[in-house]
Length: 213
Image (cartoon, rainbow, N blue to C red):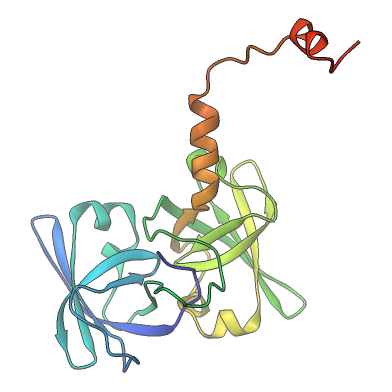
C-alpha cells in the first residue's frame, strides 16, 4: 500500500525488453533505512518489486501487463521517475490509500495556472471518470491529488509549487501520457452498488414500519 506522497525522484538508467516483459534499472539514491530485496516500490504509481540491488541503482522485473497498462514502457534513459516505498506500520499517512495498480492511462490535454498553482487537465476514458467525484482523490503518476473539476471526457487537478518541482510532473507537456489510479475505497463502494439487486423497499413497507403516513 502507498499514500501518494513522493519520497524521491529517481532516474531511469535502463529499460530492457524481452518477449513483452522487461527489466527496469532506476538510480534511486540513498534511502534510510536501506532498500531491501523483495521490497515494494511504486514507480510512477506502479507497484514493482526490487529484484536486484547495485549500489544506488535498483533493478525491477516488469510484466508485459504492466508495460501495456502503464507509461513505463515508453520511458527513456534519463527520465525522472516518482518513487515511493510501501507504507510500513506506524508511517504517516499523508495522502490517500493507493494500491499501486494503475487503472489506465490518461493524456495531459492542458497545462495552466491558478495563482501559484499549476492546473492540469487530463483526458481519459469513462472507466476512469466513473470512479471520480469532485473533491475526491486521484493518483497521477503515483502522486496523491484532489479532483477539482469533472468534464465529459476529462478532469482537472491543481498542483502546489512544491509538488510540481519535486515530482516528475515538472517535465510534463500537453500530449504526454500519465498513469492514473482512482480511489481504492471508491472502487469497493462502486462494486457493492453494482452487485446489489433491485431494491425491495416500497411505500407499503415504509408505512408498515411507521416511516410514512
